Image (tube, rainbow, N blue to C red; front, side, top):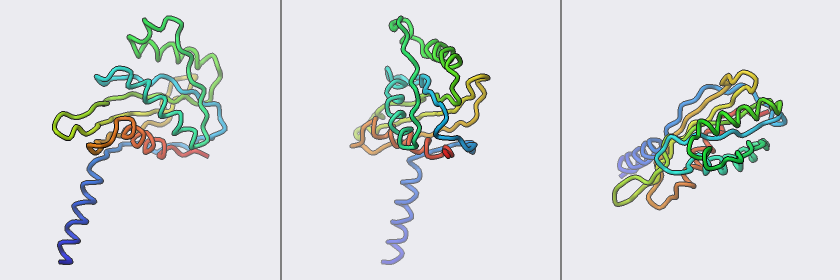
Length: 172
């Protein structure tokens, strides 16, 4: 009976660990009281506006780390800019360089969907990075992916993924 319990616990642990995948580069120590900006999160997924949804979740997660980023201004030519995330990013980067920020947060959404099948689990894959504004040099980057349970929402799964990513930032 004891061995069955141990086997069950081992399998449950492996299953839980197998649902999340993270790759990261060790973060330098970054001051929370620095001037931070949030640039667009580029959407490489098939879901419309997954980048914008991720940005909104990320703002609240960063605030838990005492980071209050200024969000890039949306272009007045919204229709053209919404069609191309790279153009939105380029415009936001130009704006950020003019504002004298210390750090820029950006990233990309690689996956944002409910998987096919009876359960329809949410699946989210996101990469984040912290950039040096003057050069665009990547100071830190991190990627994570997670498949949630069938009753979880995409936003809830994304919140977990973004939380894990931001937790890896060394904030002073």
